[in-house]
Length: 383
Image 1 (cartoon, rainbow, N blue to C red):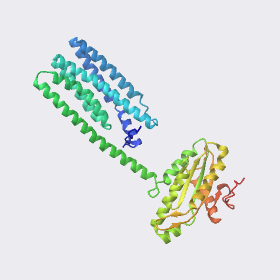
Image 2 (tube, helix red, strand yellow):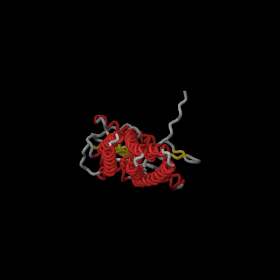
Image 3 (cartoon, one colour):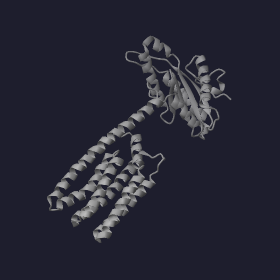
Image 4 (cartoon, rainbow, N blue to C red):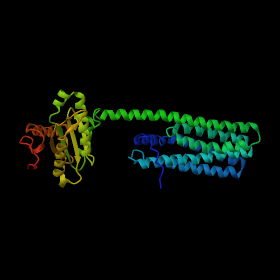
């Protein structure tokens, strides 16, 4: 049985996370409108003695309490999964819609009774809620659309039930008002999402290499500091291409750029299981490999370096020809909580890389023996 393909979500997860966070930042404003609505409904019930007003007052109070409680329980400052973010967004929409139904019922009851002052109070509360929803929840238009429908539907129905023409005209005008709310919220949401996307793009550019898309030096040093402060150790593998300059000189910089992009793709594949690749500049790359099992540190680090050297020794296919350049690597094991700064660690592993290149390239060397002969394919960690 064929199932319809799910419609892709146009929102980036980080953008949705920010938008949903904004929904839950207006507690004082929401508390004000809910408290005003409860007071207005209670006043109408007490003044008229109508049991319908009393029941609606209780419903407004209950839905207002649930809504405020949900706002208070939102886990601000915590890293939420994509599924949790969607669940919190739906919860906000549900709570707002239930409150809107209760508030719309207040206007419905006032129009049903022909209570002019009551209709005036209830309608004023409804419009205040509408304006607040557009200003607060416009970042998610579906919430404004659904909540507005839940609020205005009882009022429109009650208006058409009245025999007087002005009430029916007013009910029809509310339908146009709902359409206006819908378009205004969509416009505001689009503008806000574009601003967030631009902000995220700028942040990405600040921390990623424009040519290869890999994290740049700044992002690499930040990740290095994070791992250095962690309890477990990690491996730092420096990778440098052996014969890259002739590619630029003989084939042109466009060919060199294409080689660098392919190098980045191969290193990204090698670290897909949990490593962190970065381009520091030129033809120098760095790989970070966190350790979950300390006893396997040396073997895992050497395996990553060996695979990097082997992968980059394979030909790179360009438009009309292929080139073979090769690479060398330096390896450094770092214990968790190491007191050295990131630049010192980079300098140490660079010395190992330089030793490997001085020995002819196409091999790797341990930072602990950087001043001696590098280790080749039959590498053993020096004591």
